[in-house]
Image 1 (cartoon, rainbow, N blue to C red):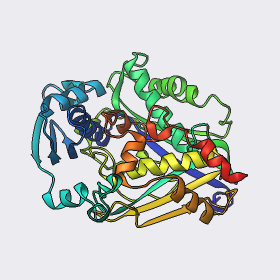
Image 2: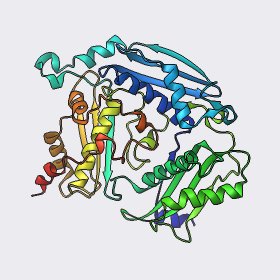
Image 3: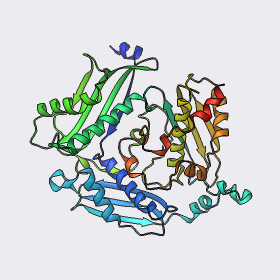
Image 4: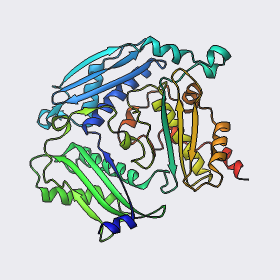
Length: 395
């Protein structure tokens, strides 16, 4: 049996609902960020959050000219997610909200406000240095219309559907916490079938396991997988432990930045390790990752490659990247080296330019904090406005 799985290619990705403890924290952190950016677009924000039974702790470094009510923002975010009753084990009205916030380190601000290059050139695009060292990745593939890998795309859609049927009152016994996982079988680069579906969802004590499994299959799984990728051999595991009544922060503590693979490409490409939520766009962990996705997606849409994996790296206080790397996994219409040269020519990768290109000094981040930062057309880094510019290199 083991030989079958070695010979056949399978890939698995997971997602979680907005009520997952880690995602609660990501959404609170990004709600704080949005509230600040709505009043002070030049604020520096690095907001972290932890949630556990009966308590949320919000900390970090924030430098801003405005005032926001963090307690109110956190409670409203928790309410919108669905934790609005004490019987859920976590309640927006009764949980404690603790805060410990300080200013951004002046040592970091020195390099961010006035980069190494700006001290010599005076050029406005050199103004901002990278907020930290690090490496960031972007990815795109032609296997789905949204240029995302199929396993993570399906996992996100199923997790969102799980929340939708709860909020719409279709399955009233569901609770906010939940997870999905999809295994896809590939023939080469082509996805040919869904092999395994895993859904675990928090629920009330009133529903039987049998009823929940039937309802989740009918109302959550089937509407997402109606395109014909399942067959008689597809395996379904719905609440495989049997019961999932204790969930959310009452069941497991949550922390910002602990779902970085869920947030990106589901493991289909490398990850630099830096999380996104709670960070303003001077943090290249976030803004450069968005820019790399933007570039990779436009490259694939333009036909320069069927798959594109880009790495960029920065030094703290330095505006220009220290390295740029492209890997098309042998699918490029041009060499990887040539595509790297095209990126360097067509796109300005300095933080100031990234922020302006994508319009990142806006309160747009709360909606990114659940169901993935990529593959959703509402975000500016998903726009395909450079396709024609890139197609000229194929002539």
